[in-house]
Image (cartoon, rainbow, N blue to C red; front, side):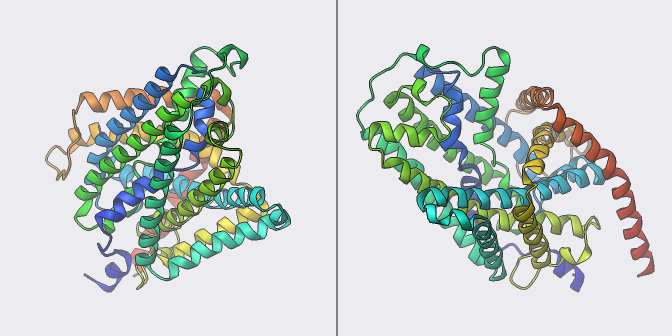
Length: 443
């Protein structure tokens, strides 16, 4: 292996425990605090409410068991970019890779800002320092990456354990609390009716389970290889599904769901009803812990997207280098700089809305990619094979396609921006390929 190869290829030093922590920490987030209130605007029957969360979890688990085959075939860090490139080739990978990186950078900025907003609810005096505090939060987690991948991995494992304990703690608190008297569901107006409303409910639940593929951002660095990564994705998803279903079950049978309809932090409202008004403070503290843990995960994953792009000549070449500490430091600094810029001038909301269109169709592409590679490369090494293929894969493909089409119809502006992005990306891609080939020829 040449010196250049050593600089561009990370070592497999991350444990299976870290892989589970990435999945658990990647899925558990603010969604579980908020989306029960959105679902309750349509569904106020406890049995149906819990059943929807179970069905959503099973669909995500089925998707994980399918896409895990593609993860197992792709022993390379970088997340969705290497997966799409493996199945479809360089240009589709380029589009998804850059959207993924921009989205992650925007999410770093967004999560830092939301953290400060929650902090000001606890300490109002911080309100005048929100922007500097958000920049400080982003900068601290960026600086932690300079200490090495081992530190980031330990923080992630601690954060995942804390998040799981928070969910368990809230579940136990609800179970032990007295049941709130039932109120009439008719006293709360429905936000919407019809197929569109039900599709939105299902999409909200699926969003809360998002993150089941996050271990793929570290596939080239996990001990045991990509097969171990694929199996860890499934194990982590099962853990989160169990945590979520027990929590929403306790919520549904202890609190009238109609009273939670439309609540921004539904779990906080529920705990206020059954325990104490002070319980909402605990939920805010939990939300801040979730956001900080996620900030660490974002700063570990985001540079690896840019590093993977750079290795293939699709980003600044310096970003391809892995430092002695095990992290792509140049890629991290670039990601940090853009996140600080987004905090200062805004703009992350646009990037996040743009990503919604791409990433629902990404799940369609990943499911279809399993079918495509089974046809094109039947003899390829598959450390993990999709459970129930081909029927499981077709079910996932159809399900994600329906959700993606629904989102495209309801977000025409985002779809239009996505089309513009793809149109602009083609000449940029051709220019990068041409520049890269010229440099190779000269060297």
